[in-house]
Image (tube, rainbow, N blue to C red; front, top):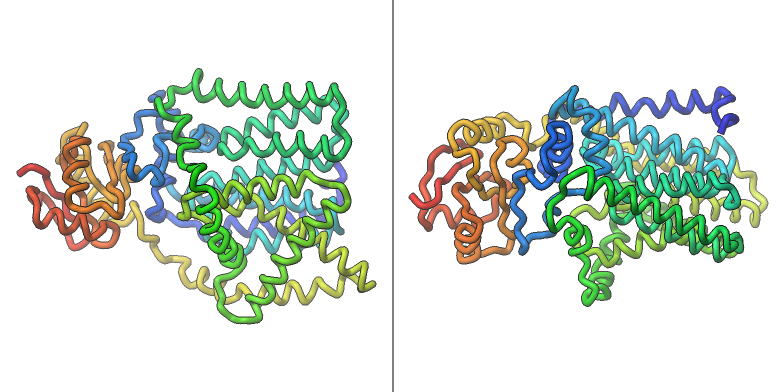
Amino acid sequence: MKAFFQKPFTPLYLLFLAGVFFINIKSTHDWGDDFAQYLHQAKNIVQGIPQSQTGYIINPDYSLLGPPAYTMGFPLLLSVVYPFFDGNIVAYNYLMSFFLLLYGLVLFAVLQTQTRKLFAALAAFILVYLPYLLNFKMEILSDLPFAVMLNLGVLIYIKGNAKSKYFYLFLSLVSASLLLFRSIGILFPIAVIIALMLEGNFEKRSLFKSALAIGISFIIYFIVHFWIFEMPKDFLNSSTGQFFLAQSLETALKNIPYYYQSFFDFFSNSNIWIIKVGISFAILCCFMGIGIEIRNRQYFLPLVFVFYLGVLLVYPYQGGGTRFLIPIMGLVLYFQLLSLKWMMAICKWNPYVMVIPTFVFYCYMNFEQWNDIYKNINVEIFGPQNKATVDAFNYIKLNTEPNCNILFAKPRALALYTDRNGFANKKTANANDIESNISKYHLNYILVNKWLSDNAIKDYVETRKSSLVWGTEEYSIYKIGN
């Protein structure tokens, strides 16, 4: 690793990556209220409050909205920032920009194991400055930190020595970190063990060391979640409860075209035919690279990719498809470079012939979206920090009972910003379902938003027993039972 930082090329590359700190730094966040759950858990860590007390009332009929609590890796990370900046969105934008920069740096090191430094830098640079990622880093979500840890683990596997005790030490630490950030992180140590066996590097002592490393990562996971912090009672079930094994094939068949389109959306949302052809070729190169890696008896990266993508295909939630691909997009680039390297060798072309056309195509493909980012640099994002929303939340804080339960489309954001309990009905709920939920969960108020609330809620407050207590053009608050 010393050589990685000795020559001036790497500091220059870092300077180019640092541009992410000057793009899309906003003081507002969108309405995807996963971020509110993460911030609330970080707030609870700082204040010494149990993780079960976030004010989010789980609706079993709408469990896909989110679990009662997320794994503690990302909230722990946010808790380092929270005491200094509280809920200041700008501070977390810079934090996410930092992890995007780290992603580019770690990916640069990974790709160097397969190609020249210039090509590795170009490929990593292309990924980091994709419009999708430049927009995504405005989200306070665990995807980028998880991507950094996953690709760091890949780098350790590629550069490490399976006969060294330090290899297994790093394996356990990376595995524990991945598990703490996301439950899907369990796939990493499984892939390591299977790859070592297939590659012939698995001795009896290695079996013990690998089992010990994985055991240590699980011990760390359980210590954090069940000894250090007080988690919700159904925390473990909520981490796996969305996988319906009996429907896995049906779900996978639905998700295959969905994630195929997500690959396109990750690189560009353009409908121009030449761009679609170029991205299709890039996807083909990825799978060619997987085949080449397997032919070379290198199984770890294909296993990580296939396992991760396989879990996504049987995961029934489709609300965040493109962002779920972020951790493995570095592997996609790795496989693409591998296949291009193979094609260059077959055709006996100078690899530099590909550099300029690739970069020109990349700029052409993303120019319109970069221009949109520039034009929207001062545009306020529609979300909890908008004045109309702040006014509604302030009214709730000042004029409702401290422990009241409120029905709203974004219950976790409401809970974070009002210190009240939030509940959301399923989007397909009818008036009888809403009535049943009001009775079952002792709901006291309904907060209706002009754009966020579904028609069933709007119809309910007009026809059932509820009274308007406060309203603006965008928001209305109804008291239930009067």
